[in-house]
Image 1 (cartoon, rainbow, N blue to C red):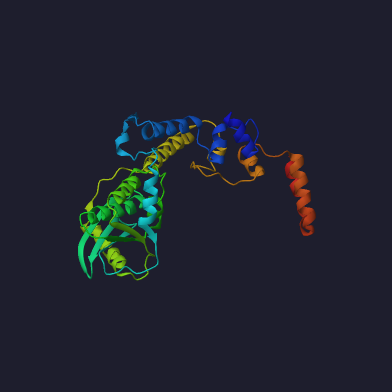
Image 2 (image 1 turned 120 degrees about the vertical axis):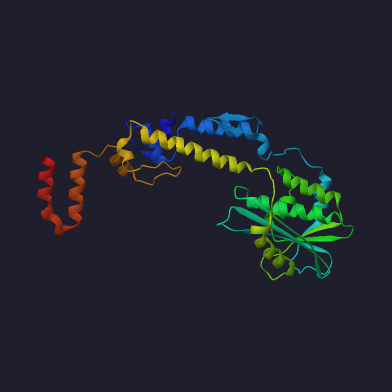
Length: 316
């Protein structure tokens, strides 16, 4: 069945090796893709421990989607406690969150700084490994700010420049457990308000949190957070790409294509149909080639002297 789709996509002939067409179109062999998806679904959805070629995948290491609906009253309260305001933080008790990404480092940094009037009363830094997402780091910073603020009995405004985090918290149907934890904390602590501000706009608390986040590279505490589901998906994709590459290198068919395309990829090769037929060993007939030569020469009169030599070559 897969062969039919490969033929339609490539425009090649039925005698073309399947392995060659899969490499040209960027479609992984069906049995490898099925294994990859089976492992991912078993671990993330069915929450089963899987062993594959000596590697163990524990469902407890990865985030779990929560599909249970929230109570409608939570959404109404969140709307009133979260605002999008382009105003400067006041001198009341505030907490600013910031995230810094350093590509050369192994970690993602997250920082929190709290002010009471004009003095800083709390500083907190954390680092996460690079396979954690930026979204996770932003939510962890916001959650920690709410937890620290809940220990005080006064009204606290949390200023964050993470628009994606704020929008996620406002979603009553979110499946992310970390977001639901934040929603629950805000509902239980109605003296805590969340405000969004524009990043790098000169706000004192936000700029200080940026500076603190940079210090987290050497001074931050490593936090244990569940791995995102996308980390498992990326790992499995890399694993099965290597298996596909091994099949392609050691296969017995499609060797003419292997000379041109030595590396498999999930992106298709944008060749014309004529180029695909040529590389797969199905060139056009001599009649069509001769017609093409006459057509090209007719467009370029100065090259008419080339025709006899070309035709003698094809006659032999």
